[in-house]
Image 1 (tube, rainbow, N blue to C red):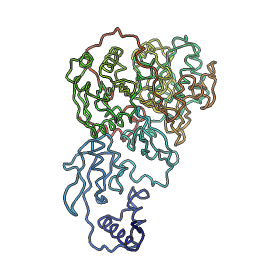
Image 2 (cartoon, rainbow, N blue to C red):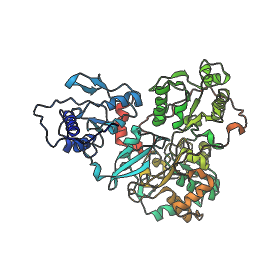
Image 3 (cartoon, one colour):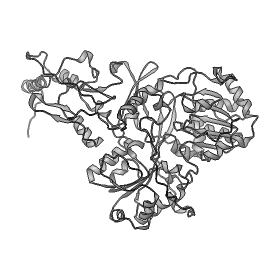
Image 4 (tube, rainbow, N blue to C red):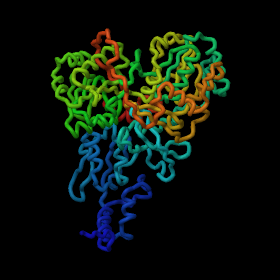
Length: 605
């Protein structure tokens, strides 16, 4: 057989030679380079390089490019590996980066001076083996050995990307992805990666009560809870309403629901689920194909959803499929920007009805598909005619074999981290009616709930971690902890349950959401029967056992066949975009300075 020797003097010398060429034009920036300590080139030259250099000529230098507010470039350090070019064109699907010049004048650039506009642009920071592309907000902030990494999950959208939060002391320094092939592979969206500076701005530190002059004054927890409990006991049970926000974990929603029910009201809801949430059958609000399962599809029909801004990681998965298998994508909704070829079939439900009746040219493509996939956006929940729209979607699914024993291609793409768990736990009241009749309104991190119809004399408690929109109407503020500071259960859009792990201590006098509700229930005279996270979780397991099985995706068992037929008619109003601004969707991202810069520079005016 063949004998291979890997550490003879000749092999060692050859390695040193290659290393010398790599370092020929590479500047000695290690002490001032952000990649120092986690740099592939440092590791390689440490392992295989010579102990001295023989290079005496001038090193070439390259002009830095401006790739926008997120990626910092020092192009002199680039070693032309072209990983970023491949990432941009293959994964992000934008032809932004490329190679210019030849020989030693070769450099990476954008050809014409433009910014990198992709919503996945931050991933080039992770891919770059040297310090040529680094994180702009994180530049010169910390070295990687000073930071403590905490493996947790992201809550800025409903995908639940797996992330590592790097913190130093009480501050979150940066967020990087970790590998999970089923959900986000090894990428994360820019919103996930750069929203962390919102965690230290606009935070609520102390319980506060609004005085007679309309100003807030800080009080102790005891006083704040006493005031809330007193009001609670004065209003009628049916005038109590609880609203969970889009970043709520399952524990806090369970506590809120139990508490409001115990006070005698059934008006508990989660924002973003619309007037009549489809909570009866689990398959009606989950991504049944699973995120990884989308790769098996050969035809996509997107109904009223723009995955690029609603769930960037799901969009990356669709882009990967389209690239690999030339899958066809049809889209019904307002004009939108996709990074793969789509057929814009129409803007409203009329087109959907045409497909359901088989009158549309796209039907022939659906008919010949082996594994067709329909993805409906959770923005449709807000429509008055959502029952009719979903009934039309189900007709399409029946007609074109989208659901069958070995393949379920009927999907709903949710928008918020709390949505799936809220529907599992049964927070399903009608927001307009519940708010209109409320004399006591408990907002648990809910900022985007419409308070126009709220009675003027209603008492509003705002419990949350950021001074955001809803604080202006609040009578009492109770500060709670953000996702990076608590242990919480979240269910993502495909029904996979995951936990957040606390990375940093809470801010000021804040407490966990469910603990605040538990303390309030005690003072209000209707104590909840649990005192620890484990006890809350055992209560959750009685309501929705899937929320206790972590890192498992539990498919829905009941088929949609059992639903009664819908009498309602589809209204002709076109579908609306669910996300106005990709970079600002919740309290954390709205407080973030980096996200504000992105909105200003990257959104097309």
